[in-house]
Length: 462
Image 1 (cartoon, rainbow, N blue to C red):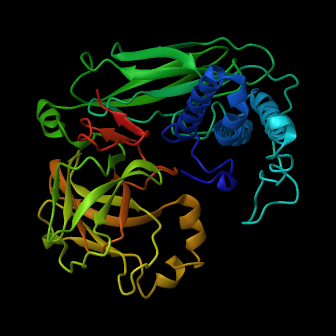
Image 2 (spheres, one colour):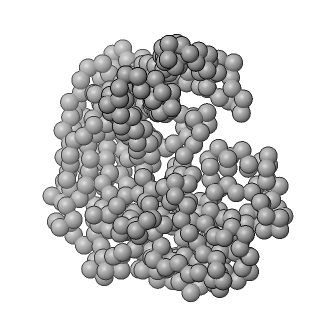
């Protein structure tokens, strides 16, 4: 998904879509699986396993978790969390652990047979070449003397309360996607700051969980809706966090009408916010002249990408008569929508093929996007201004606009023009997308077709 030397504390989003948290969970799970295999091996097998599997897994996971702690340290300092200090300690601990892993590789594994193999510096890259010494991420500290009370942060926002002049608001929940949201409560001083969290509406459910924090003193409260009790349409609730003071958090919810539920069944989308579409989630693939879209497993950011085969197929000037993929989507309102098509960072590998692809809604006129235009071709090409970003991201994002004449169920079509275009994900929004690396969650309205993998970042709708 990204090379380790390209990671930074701000690579993934702390605020949006639980992105950093989900990636840390994935790495931690991989460590648990690798450790379990290592425990089951004979002692004479473990050196080889450490070299080939366990060291790469532990080292990469530790690096990601260290950068996540550095990101939390900076964010928590802005929110005046007492746990800022715990995150700084976590960064230092993981920086030290990286060197312990390296020393095990050099001096312990196989009795030191491969000494110096892991000597190259690898933390703190600021250019394509390695730094002269490993550089621990910068950390912040707070003056906690005499500080008391608690603070609140909310899903989708980097700020903390009290402190910001506008009141906090949670992301809108809707009965189609059925994704919960959360707020975090944390002490701002060294003393405990007990609170109660309640809602003013009976259809709001609150469940305490573990915060994404190195400190057990930070608490997370998951906020969800009992949709059987919520009124149809848009409604509001207030969450009250009460301690030595009271902070009120606004929650908006939208319950679908029976017609909306019918239109959304089996489609991607919801009633609020941006959503993603897995490229393997199409309902119809049209083959033309022996050329077709087919799955590439385990590609780039996803477990299943789509590309044209054969790779030297002729170009199609008319995408409506070309190989194409059709996706059922549900749009809550009429109007313009932005479609971000995340592709592989392919270069102009076949001279004259400019890497064009088309996107359109229903039977409307296709919008054609081209990578290597006269205006942008040099920047997109090898060593161009955008090349470093594309290769670091393992992706290129192409932006399109579609217009829904009416709300409800629609068909989104992607049509081939040139081969060698590799599709990774689709993101759809009727507003400026939130900052994130992977984009909004892909809401799987149904299981993928047999043999078509689903990204680990896909949320399967129950």
